[in-house]
Image 1 (tube, protein in one colour):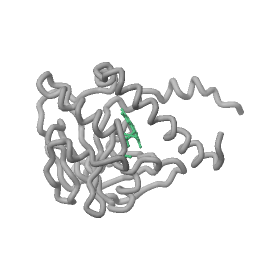
Image 2 (cartoon, rainbow, N blue to C red):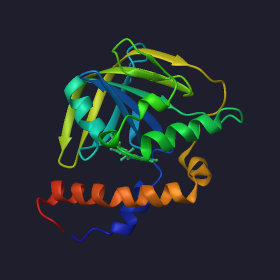
Image 3 (cartoon, rainbow, N blue to C red):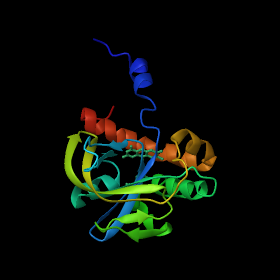
Length: 194
Ligand SMILES: Cc1cc2nc3c(=O)[nH]c(=O)nc-3n(C[C@H](O)[C@H](O)[C@H](O)COP(=O)(O)O)c2cc1C
């Protein structure tokens, strides 16, 4: 059967509206990225779990795979807090830790796993990985929550609102960075350049 790609993409679009900032630490180096593929992963309220899918192309992927720890932060849409949210999004999502330290540009404290907690985030869950699933171009990580705080009483920012606030030159750079990332994903999935 031929797949209706448009129908599939329409069905799947926007399922996870909240951009999250994922941080980690490995071998003493702290790093992180933005993700739109994060969610809750437990039906037991007193034993929360979080999950996120990270692309193998990204440095954070290899670091979480190696260290087994990550922190998932929500970002704030509050009037006094949204600028800091945009700073986090642009810093972590706009370049790779391979090109230089990103975490040092943000306000942080060290979490109990050693991973950095972003103090200007809305809230966070800090996790130790309990399982992961390799799906060719990416890995889905599930972690037990070992610490959590809510810093803000404001709403959490959604990707539509955040995207509308991004400067044009940042979007251009993001689009340029996305080209090799997409190619890498296709190489992993199909085993050849397509
Ligand atoms: C809104 C947004 C959503 C993103 N979602 C994901 C995602 O779900 N998974 C992923 O691996 N990368 C995602 N990215 C891309 C990474 O954040 C980006 O490639 C980052 O620069 C990787 O940094 P690193 O190499 O230091 O890990 C997203 C970026 C943005 C701006």
